Length: 316
Image (cartoon, rainbow, N blue to C red; front, side, top):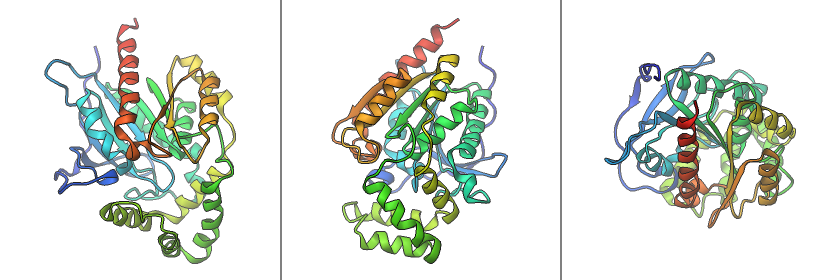
């Protein structure tokens, strides 16, 4: 019998989303909460499982970790579909991202320290009787990997548009190289202005573009510098992860957009082979299938996660 659930953290804002939205502004029924952690609060979105009449929910939660300069809102299009599939959702802002306060220094925002923090969140959920499905997107995949390596008691690990180590040479890495000295010397406002001039948000819905500018402006410079530096220097930790996965029989999925422009799809497929993990590429998507083709991503995630949970219930 699963232990009784601990009370959920106090809700900060239970107001439903207003008006239509796309991408990060997709309406959903999650509550904005603050999660208490040893290093300070983490801003999060929590949605309880909403099972269909013919299907009982699993006592499970998907913990979703965003990438560099991202936030919990990156998972907005996934929240209600996952909850309606009988799995709760807990989407995080890492320290220094959007609504979560930063940690003291740049080094604190690397995958190792952040992984310890995410592992603590996973332990809290598991102690409340929930089976945890941990997903990390891009830089968040490096953090989720570090969480597993530090002993996070997850049932399954999903690495989405992430890689075995540092970001390879290409447009995304070149952007980090360009923006780092601007951020150090001229500050965050100059970075926002530079990205505006580059037309980074021109293709987005105007309301989404306004949100992305606002989110970046609220980010912590120390967090951006620490995460950016880690993206250019993270070692290949796949051998360590293989040992951890085998030792704990942890189910693993590697999924990416078919046109990912960060880590090449071939690199991610090879990583999946090394991990003996399932692999899937989402069509009509690049580096962020969660907002570019959320239904295509859900078509991969939900059947895979249901299989993991069914297998979990069959184990003695």
